[in-house]
Image (cartoon, rainbow, N blue to C red; front, side, top):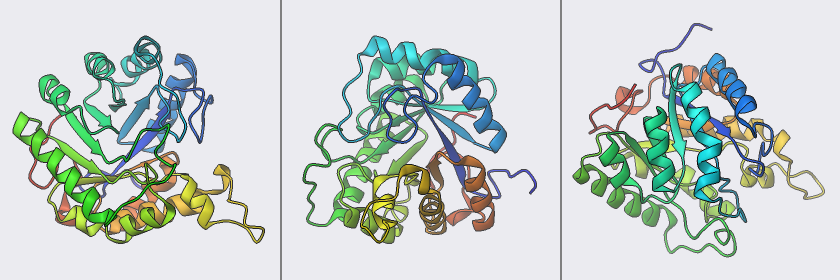
Length: 282
């Protein structure tokens, strides 16, 4: 299949966890050499952006000290950023700033609080919705109207970011972050409500637990992480069809093919920014 440009399809963000405890691949790329090698594999598979994270955000994850998170991610960002666009997956201002100094041009922020850092550094920002913290978020998540509550919070944060001067803003409904299986499915089914805000939408469903539940066998046991590719591709494809401008995935090559089949996202915007944004970064 020919190489794609961001005019032909939405963006594919490749996940690079430099951690010992991430839910899907914890430990596989733990260490600079292994992480950089994996980053080069993701580039070869067609990743538009590589999302480098040094702290797991899986349910029950513990907080990593700033110094340790910096040790994990900064050398990887430095090594990969000359070859591909790099985002930093963090909630810590110190880590975000250091990663930008090392070459990252996008802050992927599951806390949806780091827009001042993005504005100060002149880079893009992803605001993700999360109810609670990794330690508690799956204990008993509740909403009156999950779609409306997620949409309204993200729209408010995006407006703050624009007002602060962030030129490139993405919103992410936070599938699996303080949501039940039903909440996740409702957010996917009504993803057009987020797209209608006019902000660029990023969606991450790759290998998540709700896909294992949906693919449970006759014995009711959830499908293991290794058996969630079909669900990951199906939900990523659905998100792209509904107008998401980017999907965050572990399986880059297969998702790039799916994105090419779907074609250009709603409004024809495959590059950075929202429908009202000015493009920032490269």
